Image (cartoon, rainbow, N blue to C red; front, side):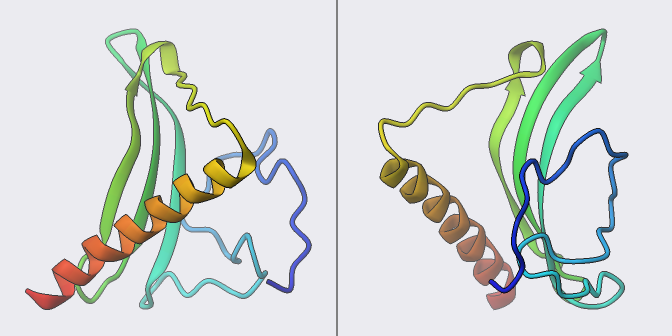
Length: 110
């Protein structure tokens, strides 16, 4: 990664369904035809109750991509996922990305 990431990566900004640059490296995103990855998080307000979510999604206009729900229907729009160490946190997110890649490979093979 060549870009210095500043945290928080989103702070009091409108949501952008099609980001213009990669959060990690700063390269332009080619959302009109290429594959791009999104990490989506928030609260979905249905029937006056916020249902929190966190997902990873591959947008691939050629094959449809794939997605995994990390949090779905979090009560009151929030969910906490605990880890005993940064190593376990890293392992968790690596497994999430591996699962996302596996879903895309399954779609690619069909």
